[in-house]
Image (cartoon, rainbow, N blue to C red; front, side, top):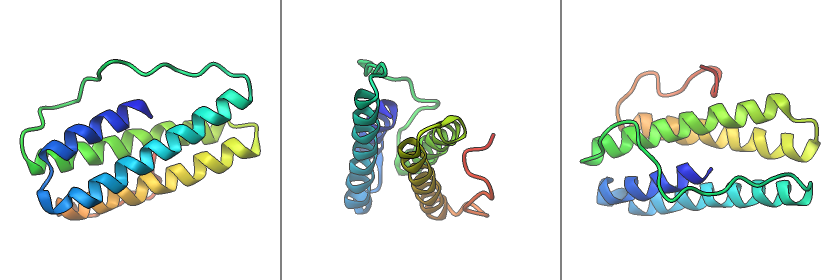
Length: 129
């Protein structure tokens, strides 16, 4: 959750300027689901993971294409995490957050793949590796 927000800061720095509004909307979505998950953990008395000072990205981001590739990677990685949360959830509230977040990640990854001309732009079972 925290790493996605961090990565979208890097994506924003290198993305095509015509995507500035899109990137701002997507980082806001990641912040919102992060905050919702943190609130849920806090209300359950569960430990809340701490945010790191920085994160390592899987490849250099130097231009709009690599920024879009990073966005796909972020969404795919988040989908894996949300799918795992969904599979392990005992509480309905956790399942609700996880299934919505998983679907949102799949849509966002698909949209970025369209921008990159990746075919097919979506996968049948997002979050599965």
